[in-house]
Image (cartoon, rainbow, N blue to C red; front, side):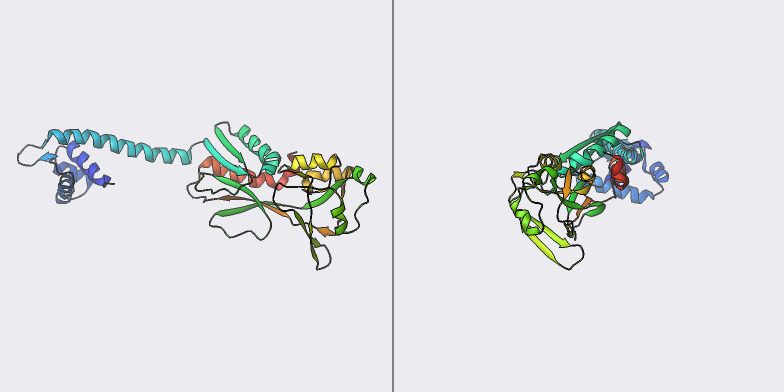
Length: 302
């Protein structure tokens, strides 16, 4: 890429019809300006300005090159104005978000719709996936993720949104034909529901004693959808680990029962990852701030 300053200097020389007036307008010496033009001619292997006459003259090819330079500098100016206007103007453009399938159902899907209703010129591409996405390579602005503590190291910026308590639940109807488990081992006697993954186990930590246990299980239903899990649990198809926020009303009404409450499951830490706030488009930054604020009061979303 050649130095655009040389193109700019050449345009000014032609515009002011001479080195003297152009050097005054640019506040640089005539000799420095002349060196820039000579260097440009040497690099292009062509004469742009005639120097053997008393009257300033541009060669024929120099005049054509001048027209091209004007277009180049105009495009550069338009590009800079685009950046300035994009960073300053009202919210618009497309925001690319990736999110686990279960969280698209609630709350991300509803939050994105709410945001778009407030900002009509913003478009959103919401990708529901449980695969780990390369944010930079795949052009993702915001990646919603769920991990257990501690979070792994990353070159990305990571902002916590919430930490969801998970509870082991089953339908009260299930225990008309099965005994309520008295200990963790009894859980293996019950049908279960789990995520679509190769291995299945629940990690438990006792609430008052320094004890941990891991219970393996073979789910009858495998799904990445919290809604499908909840529906299956309510239909007495088995036991499942679900975020308390998903089942709090059913627990309150007695439709669902929390099992082995003296043991706790790991919290699911919901966070958003992104490359950097620097250079972030206003729509992306506004949606990020919106999600952070709305996650503080999810009870008003359902």
